[in-house]
Image (cartoon, rainbow, N blue to C red; front, top):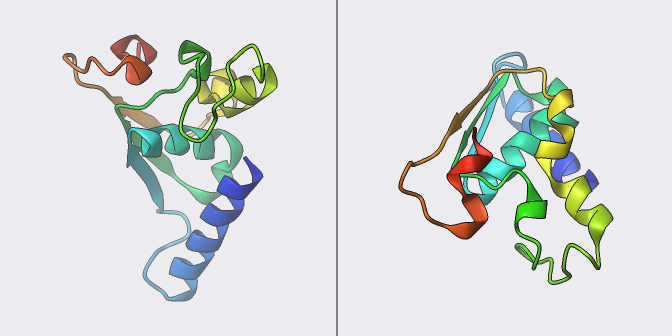
Length: 117
């Protein structure tokens, strides 16, 4: 999670330095893996963003127990990784508004509609 937060901090600092963004009006958003990162950033780096928009994300990695992205280990081999990487497990830390969007007909097993409910 540290690398994700550090990258976001660097990007936010740069757009503020360039004068193209107001520090209190920066929104984070993404689709699929970007939605997953959006939720994680709102949980772990709330000081950077005023709100977030997440579309068709996988927020609970325990629902994809046989791997995700570059994680080839199973849930049972790397339980802590799955828990730490799941925004669902840190949802209590998300205090900024987040708009969750998900297609009713999205049948991707990694981003089941139930994750948005």
